[in-house]
Length: 130
Image 1 (cartoon, rainbow, N blue to C red):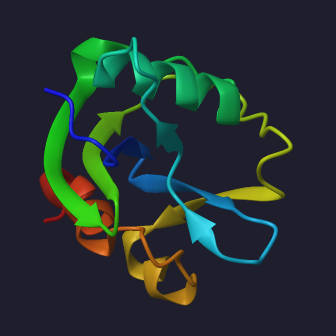
Image 2: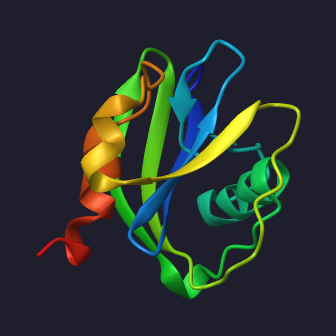
């Protein structure tokens, strides 16, 4: 279904060893990997492409779980969780300036972009919190 003027975006909380991957923008804010869904893409294809472009990590779709959907202005954002079982090195694109694997307890120390859904980040730890 097409929504005129509504931009579809995907974001994913990548969990590896009980830490979430955050990417730092040039304005010193942190966000999850993700981006725009192209007109000819489904959301999972967009998620795989955006993660590959931004981090060089490959997403195994069997480990992707949809968390929620939010609206931010003209953007409709679908939030996902991904348990990354690999140990592949992150290689960021020129879209970001740094990356960090951040534990649940330290997430509050990072200033997130306004559209980053902290609840999605926190819930991505949900299965692992005792």
